[in-house]
Length: 218
Image (cartoon, rainbow, N blue to C red; front, side, top):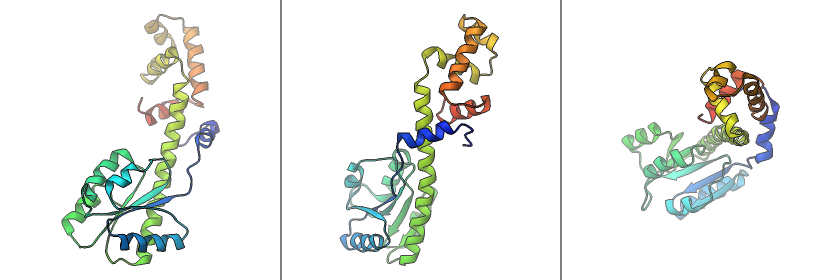
């Protein structure tokens, strides 16, 4: 979003700054995990590894950049099943699938569901690192969007009930006079509420206010 008011961007920083990206490794083969961990440690990445989907899901979910190296053939919850869950639970975490066999239908299914890459073991280190860097770049963009939405929701939460009512009428295209008639208040009072909405939302224009409302699903 092209935000004209710097205050909302500043709000993102005050809420929290995403820390360094984390590469999560989920594979039940300890030799694979250790091999990838060693490579990524040498490249300066923060790494967290798990041997099952349940162990991974138990790890605290924080809105920060990262990606997941996910084995297809996991015990219990499979890689594809976990992918479906994460599409809703952790949409800012791109997935790179790793597998021991080249299965075209599975690859197609994973890629259609949003996987950024599908690597067959044993894979080339350069290929893996390129995939991780690309996934993290994508994740950073998605996380910035999430922080921006959080900042807007925080501003929206500061509106009074009356101000939220006025905002809804504004979004429907009502004029001040029409809003006053609908709410049973004077046009002057409507203007005052409207001014408070613009100020609290840090919106520099009506177009920006509408864009912000769309971002958080109002």
